[in-house]
Image (cartoon, rainbow, N blue to C red; front, side, top):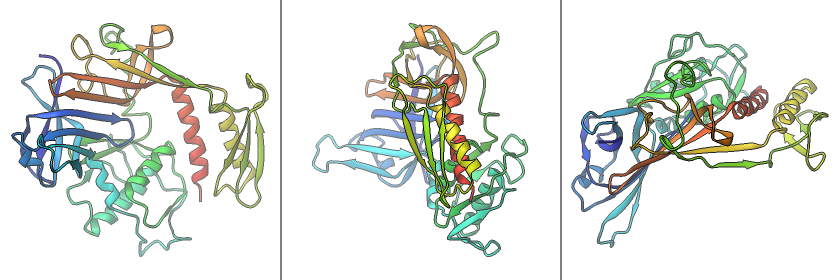
Length: 381
């Protein structure tokens, strides 16, 4: 039996209810450094429908042989939204379920008695690391009685692989900001990588360390070959972000023009404006402008690879996950090292599983790092 996925209903922060044996459609997405999501449809006339008639969690399991099943470590979701037609005789309802990580939206940044807010912000000084910031805010939330059932595997000193946190940076967080937004903000600055490593457990790491597993080299690389693992390899390329000149506007009348003199622009000089609140020095403005024009010399390419489960040698979730480096068809169809940015899987009512990957080549990874540099420069209070 080929690769398959299924859904399990679970009590909120509790035990298993049972198997949802008759889903009409399943779609699940696992993006790297972002929030996994699940959508599925189920007839409320079908066996098992009573298990999803009240608030619950949904666990996504996978199997490569049909007999041994595993819950994917990022595959626990919250059933918090449903829609359907009350007079539809088929009784089909659609369910939208974010990752359990979504509970971080239900804990927000408070003022702390030991840290006086500044301009409505919780301010962390220049020695604060991403681990320290998240650990502090998570502990505060738990002490207030929030985040029941949620756990994490890092602390203020070390990440989830016991590596010391680095890259400290001063930052201000507006009071009332939810902790999921804080986590994603740290990701956008290039200060942290994260994933769920258990049903209700968050792990976080120094960026480009533990979660950058390289399966593109060695004696047995993960190589997704056209015709065997990959059935289609569409690319969408755009020149919309190209620019050879940046005009950066900061605070305190900071105005800075940066020009990439050697950039080849098909239609001549293209300009982009950058408004960055919090930038108060010409040096920072120049750094931002430089990173913008460096990014602007490349076209942006979104690489999608349609994958099959029925003759593939390498299977998602089992052999690779989002964040890994693998080999996949690149320009011209030849195998190239690429990083998996998202895995999307679908299952039809007939039990047919399909999927696709969003991949980034080394150039796209470079552009992402440049974007993070811009965000980090803008973050300093």
